[in-house]
Length: 335
Ligand code: SER
Image 1 (cartoon, rainbow, N blue to C red):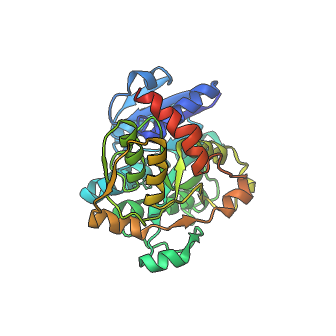
Image 2 (image 1 turned 135 degrees about the vertical axis):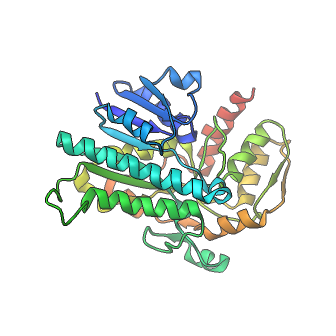
Image 3 (image 1 turned 120 degrees about the vertical axis):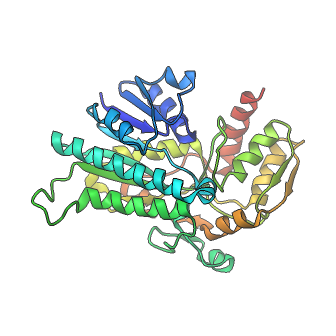
């Protein structure tokens, strides 16, 4: 039995991850969220802590447990972060640093590292122009790391701090080399869940379009039809987190991995949506600033490293995501 901490527990990834752990069974789940968990999630976890992830009180409460793994999902996403950059830095950076330090202390004391799973993002990339984005195509982890948003900057920094605290912490001190932390990050594309809608992201146009159509509501898409970024169905996102957590450390050649699934234009998503929901009404009303953010993200990711090192492969391409996951599940959600 492992003791597993999940922050941002009632967010989109948290929701699906808790369901997955509940189905697997046999672990002790400690959920942390800014707000009390909804009853359905509360029933699936062993402890539920309501606290600001970036507060000392949150760390103090979590540190009482013999934590084996942390899934640190709490964050302000890219659109929310641009509306309040200081708060984003506080939550996304200070909150992460507090938990990394906590995990490191627990692992060092025990003599076996705490695994720390961190959702990073395609927002760490900053393509200089739409033309170059088109030419660049699927990019690797080390290309175009010039994020334009607070969120992307926060996540890129935390990737590096996580690797530092795992491999080089206090490298001049005597305790250096005895890391209690095993940090692993995934750069998620836009995630699309059939059961929850995102809030505060800039990839939100895809899930918003699908959920609007399923409810029979018209949708004005806030990016141009030709806008392209990678997306993934939520079950694959959860699968990737669990697979990376289980991979033997010696098989990993890096601490941060791209993962991809499909990379449609907004127009292609609209076509799928209109086929699945023939009454769907999709129009385009690009929001200049949100458009610029998405234009700076890559058109697609090269995920060869994840495939080679820990056997990553998505279950859902776009067809299967729509036919076997999104459409049937969403239809029953709004039935
Ligand atoms: N979904 C995130 C956002 O839109 C990107 O990782 O902010």
